[in-house]
Image 1 (cartoon, one colour):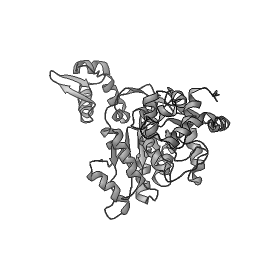
Image 2 (tube, rainbow, N blue to C red):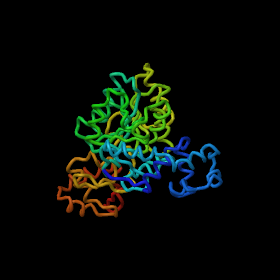
Image 3 (spheres, rainbow, N blue to C red):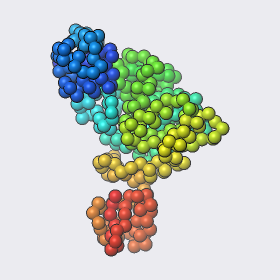
Image 4 (tube, one colour):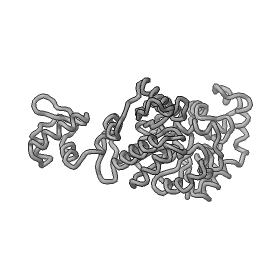
Length: 372
């Protein structure tokens, strides 16, 4: 474990983050004005009160933060329990979270984060899942995990736990974002599941390790679940459900929203069907999710040596992958693709048609083709 000296940026970040009343939005305003946590802690009361939302009580709490030993005590607990602390100034901080409206000021981590985790899908739904809901959560999580996506959820009962378990059972990666500190696994019966997730993925929280869960912490953590992902899949959700809060966060973050429809006479379907009426994408199979996810902002290397530009590439067979690898992002004649792929002309032509349906390539005039 790393040692964090008191003057270190991480210590200053934690000291400021522990100030009562400083949530994600106020944190963002403070850093936009002062640039660094150290500068916020060194500011005068008059300078602090220039920030909207900072009153006398909050400014006094910030001034007193330098005398508070909570940050040092928290770092000691982290070192004792193998918990990593990530701030947004570090390269190990998840890049997708930097792009959301209110990113967490810091993250507590158990396990590990890999570059391939950028290819992630959130699977969320009700804690009171039906047999239908659990079956669909298991099916989608297992197949998307096999394809190469990291499964992200919230460690809750029902849909969340089923999705995590399915990813683990297929040998894939999964990330649990908790609504409590990492030393307070909730619900308590998921402690063994949490240990498996830590070994094959990551446990994440923006709350100090010893913080207990509350009504406010779960909705707050939902924005991290969706922020880590390319999209969010809602499996089952009643009319009033935390999964709908996640869907709203996804919408604000520019993430795709996918919904599995349910029986019309079940209350667990009402939230899902409302999302569909509001424009979410209906999906009936994991392949639908892979096909609908848009092109990636940048290429993502995989452990098997592939470079992924679109999630739909994850489900390609050997022949499709060979043809796609032979098609660059500049117009290329089909004869060149045949030569490069070392496949028969009829195989290349039929495969190009299949790739075109998946919107991975485009045919151009003059027998040319280009990778999207």
